[in-house]
Image: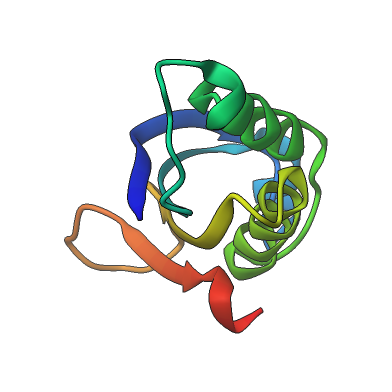
Length: 119
């Protein structure tokens, strides 16, 4: 077993519960951790999955998504990543951070973490 990670990806999205969030949009940060089956790599890309493929899936989902909840967004990303190769991918863990939320308080962000083995 080994992990492929992409950390602190930044996107602008139009998701959220409120009309302003969908209209103006907001910035998100995403961390992805994919647990891979321990097969022999032998220095060939065919024996693993390119991290660029993970990035492209996430980017496409975010640019097309109009969901209300970051939990739904995370779940959609997990579903699509797991579809790439069910034998090579054991688990997917994703963190989604909203950098600005309509809460009166001082904090950096709001984050959810979701694990794909339970989905």
